[in-house]
Amino acid sequence: LGGIGGAPFVGKTGFKAFSHHVPADGHVLMLFGPHVAVSEAGEVGKYLREGQAQHSTACGAVIGAYCACCAQAKQDPESPKSSADLGGHDMQMAWIKRQILPHVDRLSAAENPMAALALQSYRMVEESILQIVDNDFGP
Image (cartoon, rainbow, N blue to C red; front, side, top):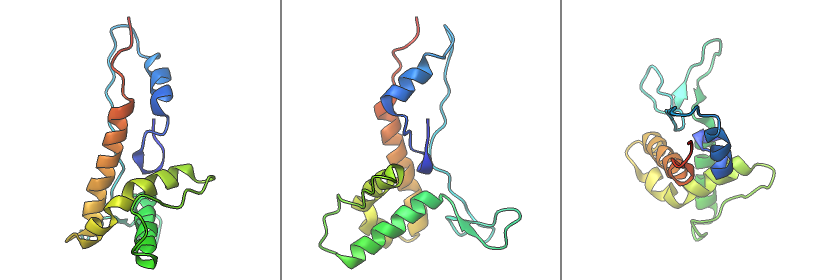
C-alpha cells in the first residue's frame, strides 16, 4: 500500500483492489507508518547502516521534506503554510512536503525536532490510512 514516508499512495482504488484478494472469512492485519531510526548514541533520525561508514537519515524522505520546508519557511517567512514545491515528477515527495509544511514552525521549536517529526509523520500516514481503509468487502 505504501510509498516513501510510509504513506498509502495506492489510495482507495488500490485498497479496494487489495481487499479483493482477502479470502472469504479472512482477515487483514495492517501495520503502517514511516520508519524512524535512532542511532546508538540516541540521535533520532540517524542510523549507521551495516557496511556504510557514515550515518544516514531514516526516514530520509520525511527528513528531506522537513529540511526543504524549513528552508522554504526561512527564505520566505510570510509564505503560506499550505504550499510546497509540487514538482509534477516527484508526487510522493510533494505530498510529504504538503503534510509537513503547516507544522514546520512547531516541529522546529520542539525540544527534539526529529522526534516531533517522527510523531507528526506517523500522524499524517495514519490520517491517510483511515481515509482509504474500507471494511465493507467480502461476502
